[in-house]
Image (cartoon, rainbow, N blue to C red; front, side, top):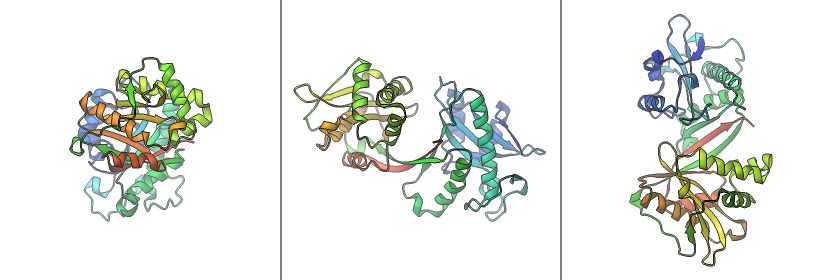
Length: 344
């Protein structure tokens, strides 16, 4: 097997490795072409394994980044050719030459050869990204059905990918619930207890982000604060939502009582594809009073009525049950799960 980056001439050849609806494959053939055109996918961020003699592609890994990002942000696609991709019978064994000579121990996935090849692909790409200046390998985001644990085919599809990611250094995992709002459920309204206003001063939001880190149930922000300190994490969060997300900074709102006392903040936003609930936070002294519903209602209303959103999506950690309950109360549907595999 030869491991290398994509060239323009390879695009059509690798499309069979992008079957629609496959676990571990965020982009089908059409989305792959579209994101290459926008710069979210790039040849140097897309790695393939091909047969040394025939040149036939057997594996593909594609990383995503913003159009202006110098380095990739996340692994979107990891697929190794199987019987379904190749047109061979379902019970056909994996080609013998897929098996790497090293590290053939049992992975428990039932397909060591696919795991081995995926490890080689990820390791080669991670090394190249490190040489280009990336501080640690990008996270791997795996989109899963909500009931994936009860679906043997989903468990199997995740199993060899998760093991390959682990052996390539992505040993930490975080499961997140994915929610979606559409207009059919109606635009939610706030209780009227709070008033919302714009605030142009980033320092005000830095202070609010810092304060909501106390007791947060968001694993990413909490672990970041533990490692960097609350102040640095708050500045990092503000910079991310201001500079990396496609939503307008002018959409951000502070939530206050009628007397002007801050209760929290709401960040309507969007990514390159869809409008999203960027972030919402309730200050510790105001928690337990249902204010998260008001903040989420305002974000949803703003995106639907002022930003023209036809769909609003959001993720929350599986362990963040209060936030998941708020999404459900306000008409959001839990349509999938996202497993984030990352380096510690």
